[in-house]
Image 1 (cartoon, rainbow, N blue to C red):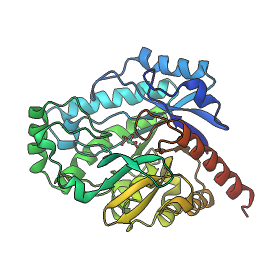
Image 2 (image 1 turned 30 degrees about the horizontal axis):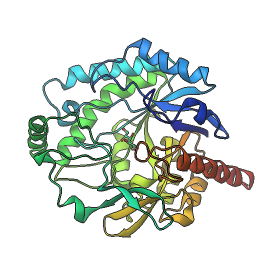
Image 3 (image 1 turned 180 degrees about the horizontal axis):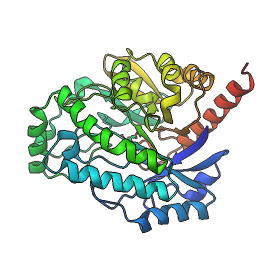
Length: 346
Ligand code: DNO
């Protein structure tokens, strides 16, 4: 495995120099942030990230994300042109040394939480989700401020999008995803890039919008659409684990050879569709981190790993889920988990 750390570019309060000092850190996970979804990234902008990383002693082999424009997801009239742009991005990234691209296929909302500063008993705070709170929120009314949420939409644009999706079923989203994969995966193969779809977070429909990358049955279907190693997964334990129905240890073993990118974090489920984000170790929450990593190692996993969301601890403030301290603690825990498991193998 290669340990990586997400970095949001120059505006990220966490610096490359800090990331470099986390033991065993191999590289950053980043993206070009100043162009809208659907536009082709300039070669210079990709190179600039790689150079900054290299100057700090870090690699840049993983992109998170190349965002999929809504029009591809809902199958609008410009979908083919946008898919062609997407393919061009993958070619350029491959040429610049990127080996893995994380993306998602969630309509309108990326990852979503209902609370940004949930107070934990230890004095830290973290992100949390409660379906009951979500039911009281109306995205169409405007003014929502949520993590993972693109605040650049005007109320009108958002209303238009929500109306379009209202008419679509899960089956329609599957069809649009198929069209996307059939075009993109052959290009990824040629470019030497592994595509890694991120699961829907949380893994159920939200605000009446269909979500499909949610569970084992749907993973089986997804992987068969284009049965190629380049058509792979970002296995995000915190996203999939929000549903107690997902048996993550079993899924990790089953999909190990198609998991190119591993997001490790723990959550505490404390009700139906209710959870908070906690420290990474198994004992802190509901997810068997050891069991998952063991299942992956036993089944030949050889991908990139990053500590996912951390709590805000030691008074740190910053980008929700993406502070330095708790993610660095998570990274140290991950290194320990892998070392223990690898050394006692066989
Ligand atoms: C949240 C992240 C997601 C992820 C995208 C991938 O912290 O895991 O925003 O980057 O869904 O496209």
